[in-house]
Length: 239
Image (cartoon, rainbow, N blue to C red; front, top):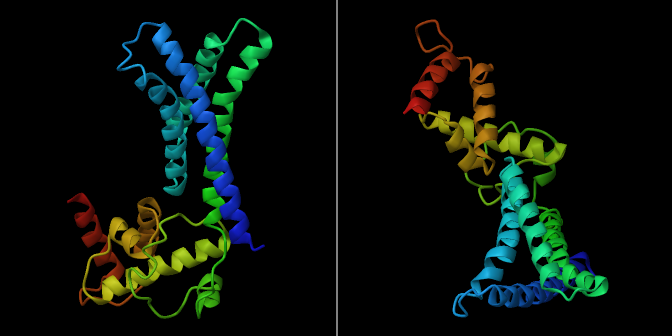
């Protein structure tokens, strides 16, 4: 059995377990809402608000991780609503320790299985596919020739290891050189879109390339081309 089949089977199992945990927690919260005199026509919304917020918050953590941004607020939100779901499930359980434990397991399983599914999504991005010609050269060192901008626009996750970082840097440099060659004014956002990296990473490399010796041709007034480019980029970012 290949790694891809193992991933698909395990992911399907996690989805089934998460759905079962959500169903059990939903039933308990729905009954609690009815017992609390929430209108029957609206009582079904109560478990959706509680457990649905947990799922959405954890998915937001995954999105923030891919965008290389902080996810403190989604984590806090997921934690608070997880505790609330456990507490409400226990409140609905009969007044016996074993019964309370049984009802508490459903929301706990929902949180854990959703987080496990998030991890599997992250691992899925690391499963190697067929190697493209020249991929080794691109990952190992920066190419001496520019690449076509947008060739890697589908991969928008930030570099996670040294090889990926070198490849992402090479794509940004290639996009930078290509835009200069066509008379465009490179911006952090434009390089990020063309190279398939985060905007923050594109802005950082733009500043580095602008202040480096790439290129150093004079524009006729004694100033290097990079100095003119820095001025043009500053005006473009201010707009």
